[in-house]
Length: 68
Image (cartoon, rainbow, N blue to C red; front, side, top):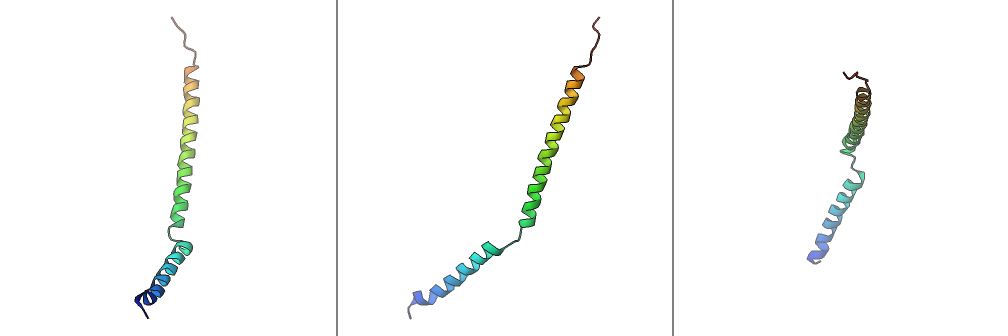
């Protein structure tokens, strides 16, 4: 039995374990989902803030002030 025949089962086992970790590992998935949700909420809040700011600015600019 040569060295390659001895080493190949080891590398197959390592590759199999690595592939299993990649395909079946759910660690961090909840964190990624939470980050996406918080990002969407922040973008939505910024959009609402911009809309409110524009409405307030337009309302303030439309106030009639008598000129002397």
